[in-house]
Image 1 (cartoon, rainbow, N blue to C red):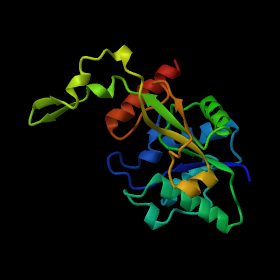
Image 2 (image 1 turned 135 degrees about the horizontal axis):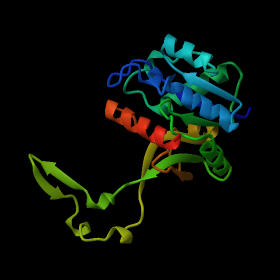
Image 3 (image 1 turned 180 degrees about the vertical axis):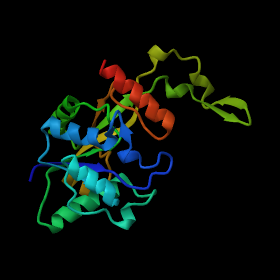
Length: 226
């Protein structure tokens, strides 16, 4: 078949209780990921992988499919995103459904835009995978460590380098991944050899792990919608 968007939305978040369905600007935050996937027009199906019946019910009310529940083994804190995706593909396979490619879109991505998914999907035809990334604010070469208050440069030789002389470096933005399913099943990684980075601007992503992160995402959302 064609392309599927998989939104992994496990229940039981601890730092922000019920994070994946907590109200964000009046709507469950999960709604934004579902809406963005639908609005992109890139996918034949948008599904939510969850172990939580309440999340599944809300996902269905928002227009996502929940054809099966996540297993106990992929619903732990230690379960990897790859294991979740492979389980979803296996469950569809048991129903005789195969997918050519997939997007993994995290549930707490209210800043992601449909056009960004469209543009990223356009890159996948010439790659194994596409990953949403963001640039470091300062060169990681300047990193310092601190032991009992005492600072030490990780690499003292780098501290005198000017930022404009250091090539930009990027990190996983924790927003979305696109990958061909045969590559995922073969390599079991979201960073296979031929992965293209898709840089996001600062108003398009926010890793949400704490209430401070949540508030920052809310401020960015408001900045986009003034």
